[in-house]
Length: 424
Image (tube, rainbow, N blue to C red; front, side, top):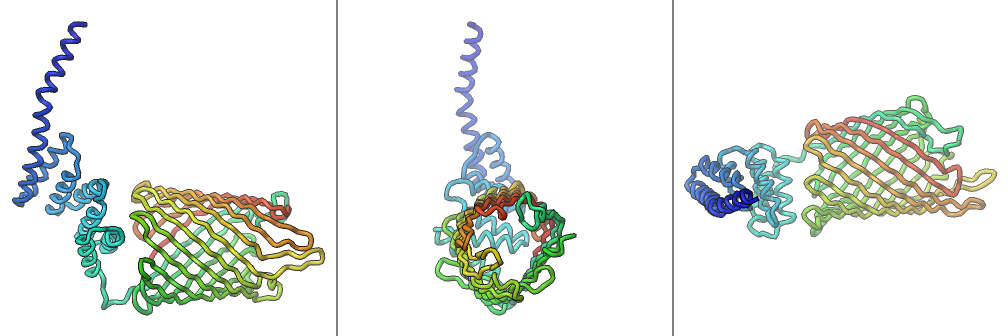
């Protein structure tokens, strides 16, 4: 026991003697690194700063100087790594984003550079950083060249175990495989997509392998005005939407869609949306669906480095006709309330995993003998793989459970789909 105590005392004495020496070495390496950086010897500065880091130094000044030294040497990936670490320190994110924007410029990635400089402009309280970022953004703009047309294409295959959404015990329940196609595009008539006039169009189609009576097609054509109002990004769009069902003319709608977005914190965004649809039937058998529908939505999103959170509330109002049969009248004017939460986890540059849970309550006006209220829960699980910035593989598993006070509207369904999407 005495020998053990003597050994402990020797260890304590060694630490007492050498700890100040180690600390002095770290401080010396860092100070010399700063001096070498000032003299323009960036290779030597990197060596000294890395030596200080290997000895345990982790400080805001060290990571900034390391990143700056690598930047001067043209080693942009190493510089990027240390600017990212530098940005994790309190109040340093704006300065880190500005320098990451400069790196993106050197790497010929104008899109990424614009994202970094825009983030600084939206969040910084530093007047110098604000002005420098605005200058960089002005250089990135090409006022002499109109914005190129944009397009988005998605092709999906899937399986639905209850395509008609009928009660479990119903003999009319049908399961089927399907494919979906969605194509949209826009052309800027004047200005930019954030502040200008646009024309946009979209096509959606779902085709079932066996159940042709459930095939749908939708074509939309609209004009949109985008405008920055104070610290809000806003847009108003007027569209004509035509729907076909089972190969027949179905509904045609005139739609007004107003949106607004506001940055409220570094990662926080608030979204507001209002939609009004004036719906007309294209055949007499669908006259019961005529009328109007209004939807109002408020949404909050928080963008982190590895996680994106979204939560929203939507209210829907309807004033539609009724379906009158020999035994009853069925109302199609529910008031709906929807709560939805989504989470996306950014695993790495390629993979993203997500979950989506929604609850919707629908209150239908009472008819002569039917008082219908519906509670619907929907759970969606997603996994996306990004081949590059414009090409993505999407997979989705969806569970839906609808409980109703009217038995025929009790149902559940499971849907799976996988597809590719491409941005042009």
